[in-house]
Each structure stands twice: as C-alpha cells, then as structure tokens.
Length: 290
Image 1 (cartoon, rainbow, N blue to C red):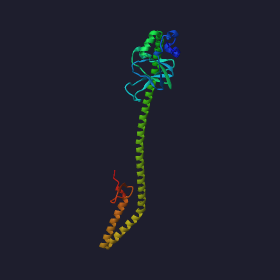
Image 2: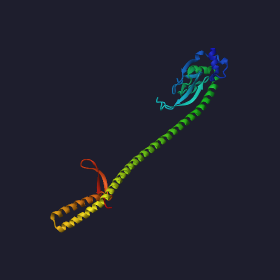
Image 3: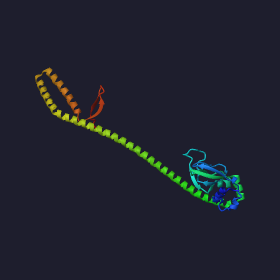
Image 4: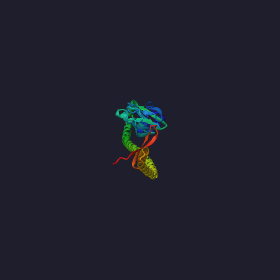
C-alpha cells in the first residue's frame, strides 16, 4: 500500500494522470526510489542501457543529444538541446518501452532536482497492475517526438547559420589579408618612388650648382684663352725656344682645365661612388650620344 506522500505525488504526475486512487493503492512504496541531483549532474547517459523511468518530483531537467559519440573534446562534442522537462513530468520512458539504448543525455537543469526512480522490473509490474498508464505513456511519447523533431530542426538551422556566418567571416578575413598584402606592396613601391624622387632632386641640385659655376668661370677662361693666343704670337715672332715650350705647356694645361669644366655641366652624366680612401664622391662621365 502506498504512503500518503507517494500517493499524492503520483496523482499529479503525467504518467499516472486520470488513474483512480483505488488503483494507485494497489502499488507499493518499494516500487519508488527517491533521488536528488545538483545542477548539471548527469541523470541519464546517452547510449547506456535503459534502467528505468524517472519521475520529476521537484525542479527540472534538460535533454541533450550528443553529435559526436567517441570524443570528450568540447570543441568537437557538440550537444543539441532536444527538450526540457519539469515537475510532474517523467523521462526515460522511450528507451524502456522500445528496449533500445538511451538516445540522449539528461542533466539536472535546476539547482536542486528531486527524482522518483522506477527500475525496469518494477515499471513492468506497475504496467501489469495498472494497464491504464499505457494511454498516458503513448500520449507523452507522441508529444515529445513531435517537440523533439521541431527543436532538432531549429537547432540544426541554428548551427547551419553559425556555419554560414563562420564561412562568411573566413572569406572576409582572407580578403582582408589579401588587401593588407596589397597595401604593403603599394607602400614599398611608394617608399622606393620617394627614394628615387629624393635622389633625382639631389642630382638636379648638383647639376644646377655646376652649371652656375661653369657660367661664372666661362668668361674668365675665355679671356685667359685669348691672352695665351697673344703670348703664342709673340713667342713665335721672337723665336724663343724656351718661351714657346712654356706657352705650349700652358696651352695644354688650359685645354685640360677647359675640358674638365665642360665635363662638369649638363652635357655630362653623374653617379655616386667612392674614392681610393673610401670617401663618397660624385663621378662625372661624358653623356653618351643616343
């Protein structure tokens, strides 16, 4: 015979909904084992053999299906929420009546979850004593299968959207890296162009200075050239051998200076180099005819 507390609870539970008190009184307290769980405690393990039915006396549970069976890696072992069950409901009936492995994990969802457990043998004894629970059992199974299908579809859609979002972010990241590389390449080209512009500016400045010096010295050198010509005429008249040698040597040196001055002009090209002592110098070369 049932105790008043167990009787009162069974009358509220969906498994025994609508069963008259006189039929419930045919059951024994020994059929029902009270258990208590803390939040996130595992109550039913996926793929385990069915051991009985769990009646929720207080609190609530969450039913989750693992998508990966043989791993404990949280990154790989995703769980899809199939259902929530609360006070006066029951869980674990599907595997029991189908005699198959547990299809999902069941965890305590509330901070404290009190359960009345009915093992397999006692469940079938109760079934024989009160055949009326078959109707409640079938109704609950049908409703849960429908709810589970809808929730699973919603979860699947959610993960699909997450995957599409991750894929989109991956594409954007790839494009960003590509743009960054292109920017770095353009930046290097800009730096190189700036070096070339700076170098060209330096060369132009040097050539301008040389042309200015060339202009300033040109008139003076022309006068010296005229004087050398006059001295040469005089020495030719006087037929002084020593004087002629001096004039010829002076004329030769003057020609060399004039040639060097002509080289230091915009008719020449220049490049940077070092002298024998390793000092930086500018090297002038005749401009090649195109």
